[in-house]
Length: 179
Image (cartoon, rainbow, N blue to C red; front, side):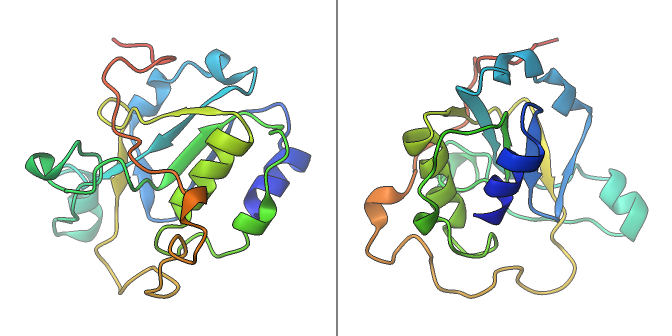
């Protein structure tokens, strides 16, 4: 809740990228044409992928980071819950009113992204797309334990109808400048 309120009040009229702290981007982030976000009716979520083999993670830590991919369209692609998890949002505030009672939780709760995604897409009217096959968000989560605040799912509290699911990676994503 606080992140979206801050974006609306302090970062109004500028693109906002909100991501978990263990997410790293590469130059593919520049494929997003920010002009398409300016009217506030379109935004993005980004599902994560493991860092590239022998890439920057390996250079920095001296080992590989083999995290499960979340940028999938199903189990054959590496994760059977494809379209149900993402670690970054890109949007252009101010956002229309969102029901903050559904956002009164830590960002790092399991299912928290589904609750926030619903508030963005359904309540605020921001059409969300997941261009993770083109715009890469790498999950650098190989050091330390679980980042989740608790193992409880925030999206299974009797308010399941207020959760966004099945936001699969798009191929011809609007607002992406393909090379």
